[in-house]
Image (cartoon, rainbow, N blue to C red; front, side, top):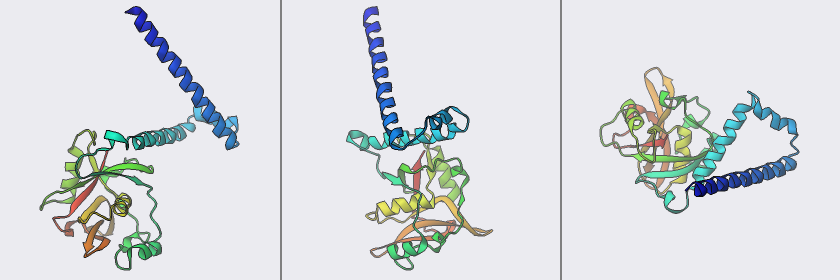
Amino acid sequence: MAAKTNKKDWSLVIWMFGWLLNFVTVVKRLATKLNMPFEAFALLTTEEGEGTLTRVLQLILQDYYASLLTGSAAVLPKDHYRDRVTYTIPDYDTLVKKWGNGNISYYFNGSPFTLHASCKESDFTPGYKVFYLHDAGNNWSRDERIEWGLRQRNRTAPNGYRPATHAEGYAFAEAHPELRDKYVFLGDCVRADKDAAFVIGVWWYGAVQIIDHAADYLWPVDSKILFVAI
């Protein structure tokens, strides 16, 4: 038994050595291609370089999750979708040309959006997100549904669900024109006055998909809510 364990340990060491060698080879090739000086790598070991390493690791993790889109790992629960979010929305004139005059909320014209408290610590790095289009029934309020989402725990959302922001909702709507549901993005809002929080959502006029705004309490009670798995 000891001999087998020792052999297994050495196999792991050899595998790690091979992986490190391949990693160094790839990094060296890319550094040469980018004319990157050694001093740039030295910065990674400093306090200032920690943020850079964090972003790199986040991108690696996103690529890993994206690689799970093949085979059985691509199967998500009902009403769940995996889509890429860039957090880049075209300017308002371009949006009007794309969606049609009157079919896109004028709050996309540079209006300041305020994040809900549940989203302020969220990761908004571009990449793949798992969305959940939740049917809340015919009686819901913004805060009550957000609290409900945060309490959920499952394999797809081990830390619950937070509400989608308008940028995430826009990416989702653009990716899924086949969905004919009414749904809202409760993750951020525009405070037009002290009494109303205007949130963005999707509804349909015949065959026309419309991305509009309304006070959170004025959205039809049968509207679904777009969540993002945490």
